[in-house]
Image (cartoon, rainbow, N blue to C red; front, side):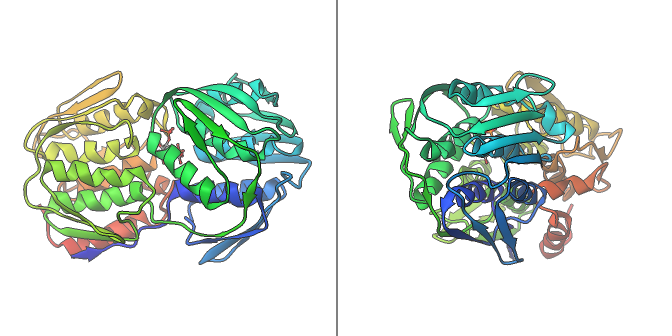
Length: 418
Ligand SMILES: O=C(O)C1=C[C@@H](OP(=O)(O)O)[C@@H](O)[C@H](O)C1
Ligand SMILES: C=C(OP(=O)(O)O)C(=O)O
């Protein structure tokens, strides 16, 4: 049996940093995620003139309800979509000229529905090269608020950014949402806004956010449920047992529902108040599953799928094509490289049973496309597939710099495999 301490949630750390920066007072963030995404977010805040004190155990942020202290800033958002979408939105609440850029990978990812909505709210936002992409400049003069329409069918992060903005506007916001993916992330946003003293009401498809700002608090970050998926999948695959403390019945993150998928496949799952345990039973059935709500765990399931006794079909995951890479094709290509039969459609992938390495494989070097989740997912495949290597193992730094060490330790505890 293995007890695995998983680092803090990326999504919760990003939201907490935004909320703390906008709050009235000093916020202490306990067990924040230390990774490229969250460090990038914190450094973005520093570039905007916020004071962020970082020790290994906690981060302290001096809130500024009036917006950034800097009147000019050049912010690099790295690979982080939460950084690239939330920080320009926060900057709009201030008074100054703020330029944002991102890595080549993040520059390719869209944000047009959000920038259109911000413009509709009167924000002066200019794209430098391509409409709806970084780099961009916000010439900020505060946000009045009012009604706005948003299509969040490509990313829920557009809606999260506007919800977080709501209490910082003069009149509040009424956000009319025409479509929404990754809905559980919006629930995280709303729960955390409440923890920082703000209110959100849902009236049908309209999210109503009154003005009033945020109150500073002490906030403990839960472990990252998407990161935990690799460790739970390892238990299901190997017949071992993995317990993750800190993720239980009260967890905010929708991605914990990945364990329900493992349960449907045959694993034993116990979700207690403060921990979740997955035990492999030797049985791993195929299934058809809709992963619209939990699509960050699509690659985890795809990488596990060839070991199932029947086909695994994952549906409604079109938006995984606009993540760090086109994840549907990246999963398919890597599985085919290992000799597995795979089909994809616009928003689905179907994987047929065939333990990787049993068919004559042409290439055991997994192509990561700079995507942390491709590497972490295929590390699960590697538990039962001798010889797997990665072209860019270090890209796990985005959310879990210590992943390979932690996964190696688990491998030791699970014992000889294969
Ligand atoms: O709001 C968030 O923290 C996130 C929302 C999801 O993105 P989409 O809404 O773009 O699917 C998820 O994939 C991402 O890793 C984190
Ligand atoms: C899609 C992801 O990240 P983001 O959109 O926050 O860059 C992810 O972590 O899987």
